[in-house]
Image 1 (cartoon, rainbow, N blue to C red):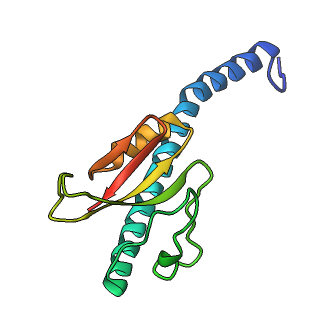
Image 2: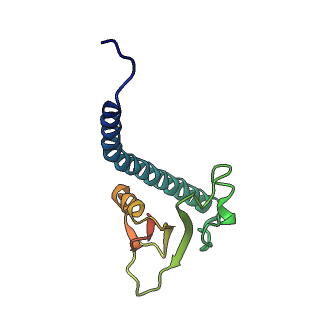
Length: 149
């Protein structure tokens, strides 16, 4: 018998196999995207850190604390053109704390600098924490402050 095409049963088997493969692959794809986004956040942290040091070298002081999603005006000239403090799933905030005389001193510094990161994606924050190798000042499941040292 010479037949063309597939029977309904053969078609259902193929669709089932594709469904099983998709159920295995899609969570992995989300994990890969989340790790890539976390790497982008770490890259942004390194860029902001460099801009802060450049500003300090030029002005002799670090910029004051800024608002969520707002690039400190003092850093605009030292950041890459078009750099923003917000991404689709992440918002940044520049922080500068003055350390009092009774605060633990880090390397003799009188200020503590950090980049606060806020996201509603708990798994993204876990990926960021997993990639970041520096000190953390404060943290929760959806917000963390990466210390600039």
